[in-house]
Image (cartoon, rainbow, N blue to C red; front, side):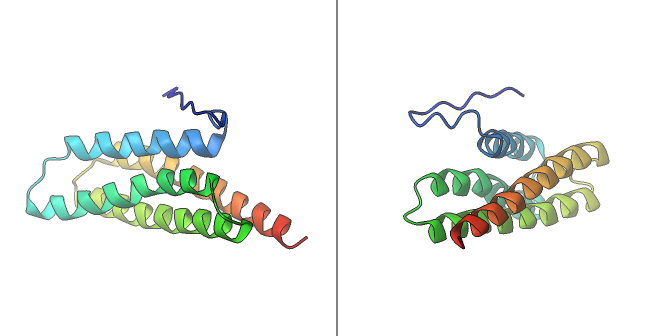
Length: 129
């Protein structure tokens, strides 16, 4: 996608920042195009909230008040990623999105999960030194 995120702290090159932001964009765009009856609205609202929360929490972690706060914010982002995985599967299994769309979104979600797990693990190791 190539979205460039620039701020005064030069976090634009962080894979976690970039991927979580791009994933939020994909979630927003996916939700826009799902035909929403009342049933789908409840599902799309949930995936929109959890899917965009990941990037927001990653950004919050930048200015964490302590290393424990940093770990907590990334851990909550990881939980939101897991919840998003659930909602994406549910949207696929209820035919709200097709298999190709779901697989692509789920792959991105898995990549974010892996980065977040590694980040939390590294932060915990550094915190325990």
